[in-house]
Length: 251
Image 1 (spheres, rainbow, N blue to C red):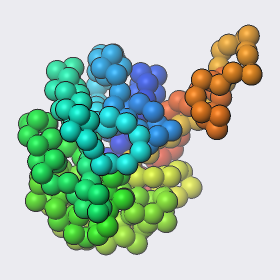
Image 2: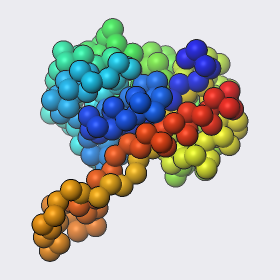
Image 3: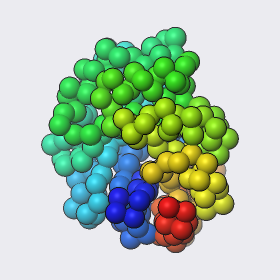
């Protein structure tokens, strides 16, 4: 953070991780299933990413897409994934859990944080689904989370900018409030200047055409509305560099 800010790039592959580092990212959030908002990556991906990059790698601990209300069995999976991520070199962890009425699930978060120790932990965008973000932030501070990733409880960080600014002021350096959600070269300056944030989160991806010559366009591997198997989303070095340059100019 020598330059006054830290850019975290969300990646789901070794190639994207390497591209993010080349572009100037200060930290990676490693996950799978970005179309679902990110789930726990395979330990194979983590192992190889750790061999290929020097910057810190924070691992998403989220057993499935959907809501953040977890069953006892899902909690066991989360604990097992935390232990494995630590074993395979994770530098930090990213997780979150809510109660059915939209509050932070304090008892579960305490239990998960205990398994995470001594690694730093980010509370992810489950925060954007809470009933009372001001109260929720105080809960996260009390629990000992190092940072919270948020779009300001709105569709994007730009839309949620007023709340992000309010939360940053409320935090008073007790927790890092990290804007994320729809951040691009077009809006980063407004978000950083408007929020006072010292860290931000982005994916900076571009579509790349598959190398496959033979293509069966009648078959889709995922849901009917999912993206084509013949288009890959990969972190774009040029986009990361551009975001990096904008942030340095602002801060």
